[in-house]
Structures are given as structure tokens and as C-alpha cells.
Image (cartoon, rainbow, N blue to C red; front, top):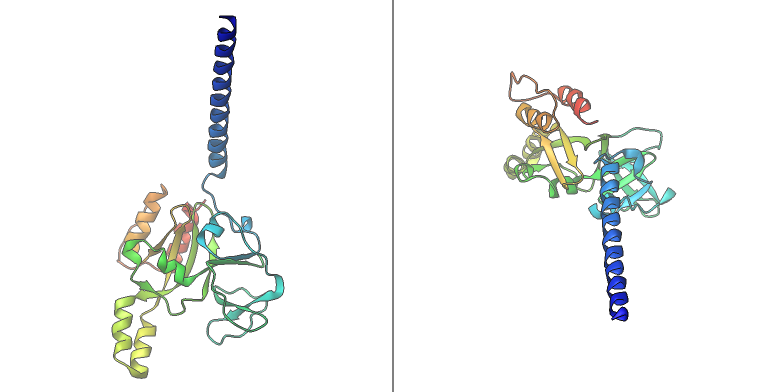
Length: 233
């Protein structure tokens, strides 16, 4: 009888120990989640390339040093490290081949590749297209989300313009592009384009800011930048 009681108390103690450990681990995970607080800062991404979104989310960059260089979009010329550039290509220094990664942290600046901006856009924005899918856009502001800009237009409209053929069609297609703000919700893996004043107000409301008066449908990029700064931190 005494042996049975001893075994019973041992098993009870063992079960309680396991439960306590599980509670401690859950509290630790919750604590870490709260500590992160959903804030994403450029300085927290180590220098290097991020092949996938998952690598980016986990901040697992591969350091490349001088093996990669920045190139201009217009003439594909090397850009000095001291020069600020909002849209660039990255290439291998040894053979000039363009890099194809989700993101690149370079000299303290964070860039995200254009093709992934479209790939992970919310459903309403998947018709937004740029002209240089393998180029990278600079992250201009950080905090609750990441903010970048680029020239984009409705893909169907561009396709129609280019479909007319020749230099005229190409010129029309290029002129449809307009500089737009883009918000990257890192945790949700979503890019949202700020196409007009209503889009901006929806974003402001989402982050508990003060909505602006929309006198016109379109909104200028300076107004977008001003209001982004009010809600991003």
C-alpha cells in the first residue's frame, strides 16, 4: 500500500512539473511577442541579402560584402555607396548579373524587390505594375510597418497602351506610371498601395490617426509622406 501511495505522489509531482514548465514556456513566448511589439526598424536588419520573405521576417541575411554592387535603373551604371537612391538594381560585382532576392540590406539602407511588392499585394492592388520587376525600392520609413515608394500604374491600362505598338505606345505606357506610396505590413505579408485620398484615410484609420479631408480623389505624395510620419511610430 505504501508503495502505491509513493508512486501516486511521484506521478502527481511529475505531471505538475510538466504543466508548470509548459506555462512558463507559454508565458515566455507571450513576453517575447509583447517585447517585439510589432515594430520593424531598418537598423535591425543585418547587412546582406534576404532570399525569401521568411528569411526577411527572421532577419536571416547572408552577408555579401563587396561581392554585390548597386546599379542605376536608367543606365545600369554603378552607384557609389555614398549616393542615396530610391530605386536601384543589385548585381554581382564579378559578372554584372542582376540579383534576384526578396530584399537587400546595403550600407544601412533596406531595399525590397519590386516583383515581390506585386506578388504580395492585397487583392485590390494586384493590378498595380511597375516597369522594372527585378529592381529594388528603398524603405523610406520604418516602425509599425515599412513604407516605400515607386512609379506604378494599372497593369491593364499599360498593356492596352503598349499594345498599340511602336514608340508612341511605349511612351503612353510609361507616362501612365505615377509615384505612389506603398505600405508593407510585414507580419501580414501584405503590400498596400496608397492610390488615392480614400486609401490614405483607410490607412490612417487603421492606425488610429486623424483622417484628412478629401477635397479631390487624388492625393499628392507630399501629403502621403506627411501623414505616414504621423502614424508609423
